[in-house]
Image (cartoon, rainbow, N blue to C red; front, top):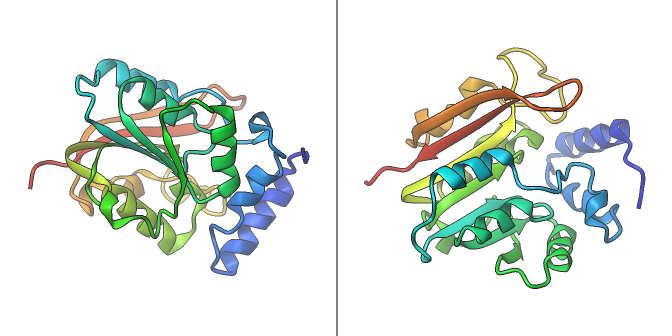
Length: 224
């Protein structure tokens, strides 16, 4: 296991972004863990409490519903959805992330697979009742953030929901940060540009010291 170096990490991400290859570094984060899912520096090792709260308030009464987790990491959120009866795909562009998931959950019902948010199976289009996105957009630059948001929205079926969790910032602030948090105007493009309906929106500070501001938003695609 390699010790995490935040300065080297940010420099690596910046160099890949400047070379217009903004996703090529992801696999290195999981490879550096050397088979130990606990060593992935950004993994919380538990499902999002806001996802769990939403699942409790919106119980899945049908065993036919499908969910997909974007950039599933080491699998906590995908497993939470599966435990609520969803047929779940958890995908990540990192092959090593998927290996960690499969080794961590050898008896899982989740379909873990390597896939690219920018080039996923066309059968996925508007095919999921729940789409869960956590912290993917914020690690991307410029046009790739727009492409990622649109690709996420396009996974949501009519009457389905997109749950979006991310770091947040005030407009015009932290513009050189890596990762770059979303401001309200950017996350609201799920509504203004992608025509999803905002069902709920939470701005909160997490429990880190010092705390980091976040958004947790729930959107719905209405019938066409």
